[in-house]
Image: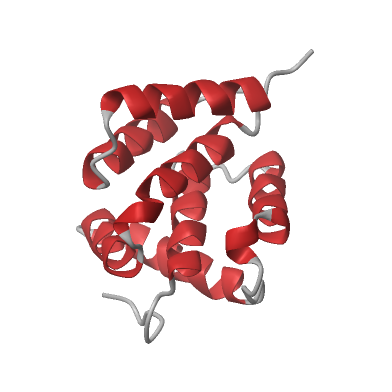
Length: 140
């Protein structure tokens, strides 16, 4: 496993999920980076978060993606850091990043499915979260 942070905070875990979705199709789009930055800058859960940590979290995600069982390791870190009450929040943020560029690509869809499974997101709740993300990122 790559050198990771000594401990991941819940906010780090949320950032890691967003970065993982953005990087899942190998093309990290500007609109996705803007969505991540906007989220960190404006959501109350990130009120006391140090945005300089984003780069370290991103490097951790990228390093894990290079490993054979890296995705499993990433989910392990996320589940360890993220209280269950924030699992739907994590899924909502992942959906927002995936929808940010107006298109969903197969690798993003597969990762969203894995996130749903790993975080035990109820199918009905997931559908509502996905619909909300689609509505927020609709283009004219």
